[in-house]
Length: 153
Image 1 (cartoon, one colour):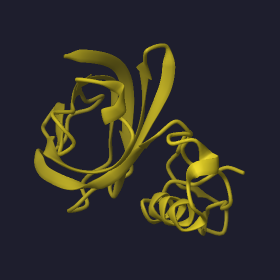
Image 2: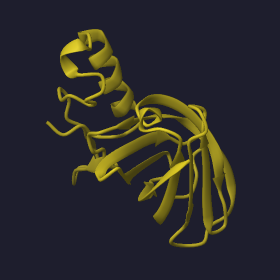
Image 3: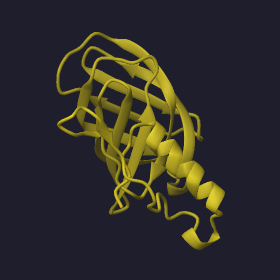
């Protein structure tokens, strides 16, 4: 098994994170069900068998414990564990999301309280962008927006 270090942040309904995979950043964006108390995990360990597992859509389940996080992904044994920055009530959570080589952030909120998302950017470089159909690009883009991850043009 391979492992990488990174960090995660949850706003209560989505988790975004960054891991250093073979010297390059790999990003994760997932929805969280049921909604939970926000948390941050500044030191998380991602465990996987091969880099190809860290691409595309997946489902996950886990526990945001009193002071720790455990996530298991349904794509072949990928897991994330870490220590939370603050203590919180423990909860069982699950959801779906995707891996990307393009950074995703928690939604940015303007002063008027409305979420700002920008569309029309390539969200993944695997497979090569010129081999991905427009429908697939649009579906991937919409998935990330639905998860609350803004897409920076």
